[in-house]
Image (tube, rainbow, N blue to C red; front, side):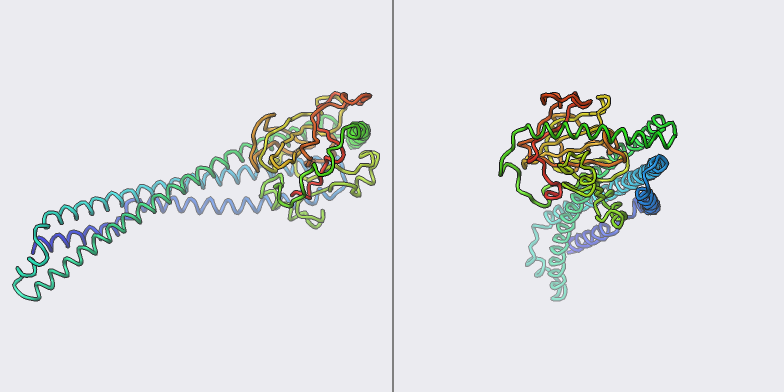
Length: 445
């Protein structure tokens, strides 16, 4: 009888040990980590506020007359904003690393709980085996009185309850461990994403500096030279658009029904949620919350500049974004081709561009990029980095020219492949399509 009660007491003591061990061994280290995480969170909030202030400055500058001074100021503010974004991302990386460290402590703590629970259960089973030859009936009849008999029965019931509790504790600890390990995996994925974002932001910083240096070299810091450069670009663009339109008219129509049915949400916006949030501040100036500076079709600008668009309207949408902004794939697919029309002297066209073919019958174009981060034949997923925005080609300010085509009609070729093309862009490789293969991006975004 004494052995039976000692067995029950041992289970109770070990059960109390289970409830008390958690958080004691690593309490000091975990508290330190929590404190550091809170410190980083405070810095993150301050940096996000600073980035928003830079965005307000960019919104003001973008609404001013286009001059050399405003162009340089835009590049300078963009660089400052990008530097702050790099600092923000580095703080997020540090915070995520601290969270991983805290999770490792939690996992070690949980593994110790599981090991202790397993030892407790094993000891309980061994003790039960040792006392297994004495049945409950024998213990009752061996008792000196009825009170002792009831105590023996209560002890037996308590032992069963304690064993069940141990099993439940063990299962709960294992489930907790599984959840913690999943959290670690998620944090590692987040860390990988942040590292990639940091790399792109550093490229964006280099792009903004390069564009400023190039602009100052071209203009020798003279406003008159800057305005002359813009005028030259516009004149060359007129010639290019005329030749391109002739080529498009010579291509066979894709035919009625060949274009995918319009469907809102078929494509994602080609930029990050962070950039999308910044567009809200431009809504009053642009009349939309998506940073669109020109829509598809016969827009006011296209109508006023029919000599540039050859009377055919604008064949994409323009999204105003600072040079170096990461441009993302609107849907999973395969990179059809990439190119750079600036490689051909005197050709003011798409600049650096990327075309991605998607499985739903659509192809998307991303042009005026400052850098390209993918290659032809590469598979990409929705939201994957394609390159950085810029103002290569015919662009008097940094923006993304985002076009959508019916894949059945788009071709990658040179204007020289059209008989009689003699413009400076004749040898530049670019995407072309018959007029009915150009689709309104807004019908699919």
